Length: 124
Image (cartoon, rainbow, N blue to C red):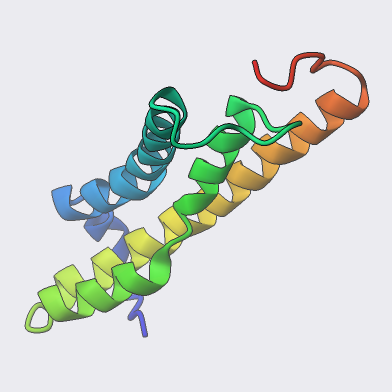
């Protein structure tokens, strides 16, 4: 579990917690988009009909919800440091919640845009 003591908010400002948040919220989408682009560019695959790069980006944002392995690794890395362990777990949970919310909103907006006819070129 996560212990919410009086200083848990301060722990979120640590470099460790900021790195975790950056990895989940920036690194995951960047990795998904870049590797997908590379796979398409070298001819390994192609985007399915009706899917755009904006959809791939939305999937990348949702990739930031990966909290199971993150918490497992955090438990191993900070076993003897309860303050770092708790702040890391909170960063993982908050970043995952943020990624889920942003990914949902991003893809929801794309769905409404396509339904309104605002996305005439799905490959764009």
